[in-house]
Length: 159
View 1 (cartoon, rainbow, N blue to C red):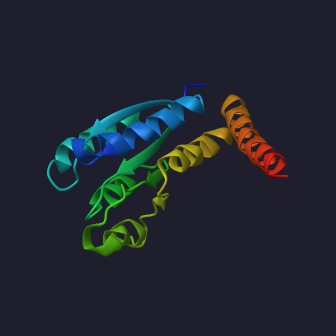
View 2: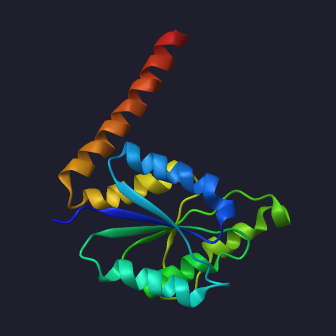
View 3: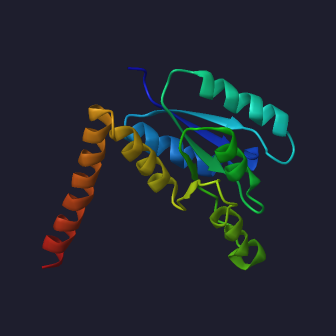
């Protein structure tokens, strides 16, 4: 079985910090990731060719798209691939936060999941891969146990 890959696709280099958090969370979960730049608005043919290359691979892929303001990238990606797409837009105070709606509302037949926290986007990708990959499933379980232990300790310290 080929090793799973998370393709973190951002609309521009201004999203690098956000994408770095996703990549770090993927690494912690034992998943290889790659960061790419491909705007649906500015370089759609380039982005489409990039996606076609990943789709032609025999590796299982989950795409995590990172774009703010008018998030065409997530819908564009989801419409171009058969693999799961997770939209993880960066936080923006522009437009009073209303730009998030471009990640939440998609046309029929286009269904990227939307997850706002970078680490949680990586976790969802890991859970998807964990359906068929026991090693990644075990990594998810270990992370969940680690999170539980932190709460148990915090409660014990409080009392």
